[in-house]
Image 1: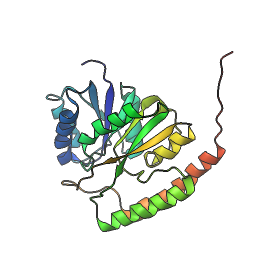
Image 2: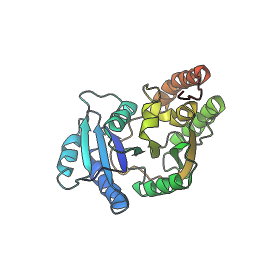
Image 3: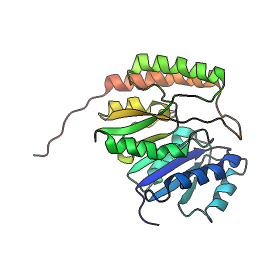
Length: 240
């Protein structure tokens, strides 16, 4: 396979029935448009997800499969995929099938038209297909985050994003960092943009999060990210 121009990173934990349909949708969306690879990171699933992925490699030459020896969480899985990716730009998708791979070309088109200083294009789920309680919790969390971080991003929880690999790997790493990528990119001196994307109902498997657990972790993380922003320093560098 030629050197990819895009790496699609998909973290998964116990998503056996969603793997094959999503891989098929990714290849349909991208084949013929640009060289790409699909990097799945299995976060120590216990439902046969890894076996399904290994079987799909026989019919999907773009597919690569990484496996965590112990469950480490979504942020670690994303970072594992990015570190092993071969392309300079990364697209991420949640493994539950709620993100639409057909939106990846839309993100690529936004990049082509954007200021070169924009290094993150974040999906914005304008029509959420989640339960009422999840939508309410998300609106509440986004409002608090925006008030504290001023990241000008209406939906940081959307799993579909496009970003530069080098810029991502330069960010401070911590668990749950994937929820704060716009603020962290802006802290690093880059611009970010939001792109409206499709959102779909989950058709198989179960959600790995609950509103209370996410809220309790989010309060601690939010304080940490705010501290990082306050303590950051940037300066231009000249070679003399």
